[in-house]
Image (tube, rainbow over all chains, first blue to last red; front, side):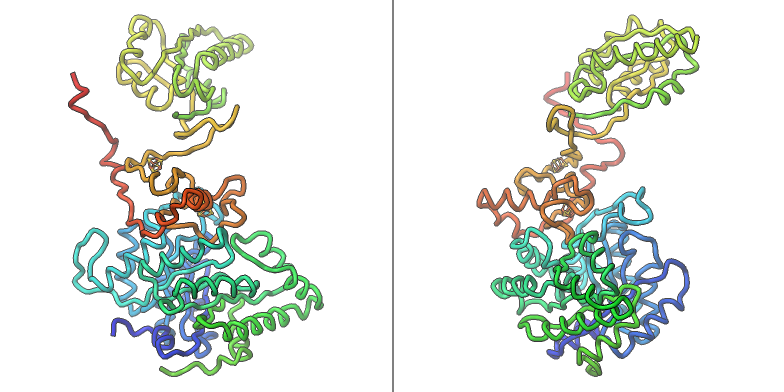
Length: 307
Length: 222
Ligand code: SF4
Ligand code: SF4
């Protein structure tokens, strides 16, 4: 037994996993993190903590993970390669494991030009695939990049992301295969609104035989309003929101749009449960964590299994 | 080639303000090709400085000279006989040219007239684009001759980020996604197999060195 990640245990038991996202505050307030943790506790198997998402400075992912751990949750440390070189990344990986964090999600990160420090230097010393490979080597072979031995390897369940909706479409699955080759054990996808395209992608995933090699968690983001849907469709890189979804949001009065967004999320979860090779969902309710319990309950994913 | 853009006249004027006799030195190589520091641009800058001095009733003396290459001693040497007559040298060479001249004439104040920008190619008349960051370990052979270090905004070696849609880079929609180009070009060549391998972390010491890098070749030394 290499790790005691709750997420890993749930997935290994063949249960349909539920993770959610938690964005740390733009300040040093630990209560903000704890409160989010309390809302999610019991409704999810693990909680992802974003790493200065969209290049905006926030309380660090590692510290927020440690706070959530204290609250009794199983945190997933998101780590982007934008801000730290391989020395800092590997050092933080060891620190995370020492603090009892048992999951890591490796990403390249949003470009710094999108955030509130557009004049910063993007590091990108290594990329997300190389980060996956580095963590895997640290854990399984007990050495860091370059071969130096660790006195004690980190214990981490290793994840990466995939975007079934970005181009070049066909190559996207080959890219997933590269991440699996590098050592990814679970995959969280971009938010799914276009189920047809997602199914097409899953078909290719199966063709490559990847559904047996990696756990795939489908991304879910409840829409708050028709305006948010339109904004995301037009402005957020790599997002695919079909016009039917936007029209459906528009068809209800503004006051009821949140409920409609939740209904769409629940329907998507139900559809995902039926797709072979999908092992769970990752709910990203951006600054709307209180929506998660309702989605989990209505998606018939409550209570979470005790493992 | 090395590309550069001329600094605003106000910034140039500020640097040369304490001086009266100014030698404006252009370069006939890269910066001539990108129309920022060649003979023509050197002449234009000289005239601009004279006109400006005239209108502000300041007495200055400006002389223009353009060397074939400002980064090679044989050509810099052409300045030896004249440089002492001037108070300042305003160089339209790239950063390497400015420093090479300064290295030969340590007592003379040399100031740059250009902002050196990147290694790039001439795409069309009036358009230059960056294509190489001189990483010291060229991997173009794996990437269908599209540089991921330079042309992917995140410098990714193992495939595109999640943001590329309809072949544009998520960071700047005016720029094609380098990875879209790499994939489609390799596909055309029937060499998508090149993307199956995981590229290990790059050796940036070949780019950053221990301070400035150098190439020393015995067979070229005298
Ligand atoms: S791989 Fe390195 S040397 Fe080759 S084009 Fe890119 S930056 Fe230049
Ligand atoms: S969109 Fe393409 S070029 Fe831009 S950062 Fe992503 S992979 Fe690189």
